[in-house]
Image 1 (cartoon, rainbow, N blue to C red):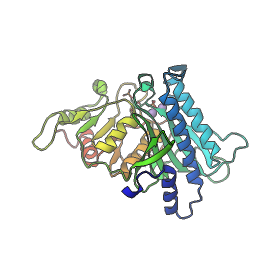
Image 2: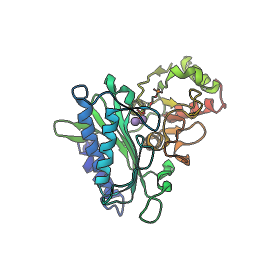
Image 3: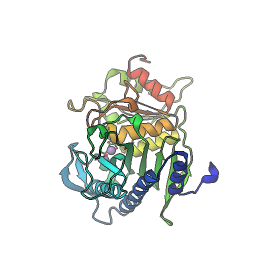
Image 4: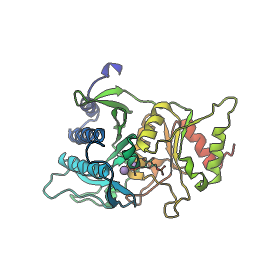
Length: 339
Ligand code: AHG
Ligand code: MN
Ligand code: MN
């Protein structure tokens, strides 16, 4: 596979398309529009601070969170580019309370895309890595119209998932169900080039990633797990704590270095007992990628990908990363272990 280093992500998608009998090129066209959106957002992110794209719009989204200008820019761009592909039936975005119907007169297709246009928004103004996350499924309902059954599909039905990380370099990581590959944007040619073929997560790591500021709001089982990680053992290293506050960046490091990322259930807000991360456009795509790389992703009760969604912006707890670390975390969280 290393002889493929440097091939463009578009050529890689086409090679994946050849593996899908009956692939019509529609999927490739769809991913190509996501790639184009990624390049444009990357360009805006890289000049943020020089142009008036930082700061807040002064509005709040359905989540009750402040909408940053770059959130809004990325959201609008993704909607425009995805519908321009001519292969989308309906969209769901973190930045819109409701499903986003196709504009009148636009050619539609069989794909449903759920996305977080800009993940880690609170970090934008501090020049900390942020990202875009997408999840691609097939329309499920019959007939030309869409309904909520097309949006509320379990993660096992994703045909593809990926993210773009706007960091020290801009990377795209995606899977169509045949493993996970990473591409780095070469700004001099404007192409994403294969830099991380066949990503495989280590069986166990030495990093735990969680917002320890919420310690007071976590249950005792979770605290027992984190205490265990902090005690050096004869056969176990002390774990480092790394937390960036952008899921894409924290997950990308976990995917490459191993370890475990947790955004667990907490008692911060009685209205949001299942933590902050959204199932359809944060937890499901990251869980598909993690499993495709040999890792695991759990809500603490079950495999994330098997959760039957009930709402568009539904939140679930997320414990994701190296298989041995996730198993260990879930054993504590479920009360099977307390040391
Ligand atoms: P978004 O910016 O799309 O709302 O996502 C932010 C999320 C996620 O990126 C990150 O893991 C989490 O918020 C951090 O939340 P805390 O600040 O509560 O730790
Ligand atoms: Mn997010
Ligand atoms: Mn977001």
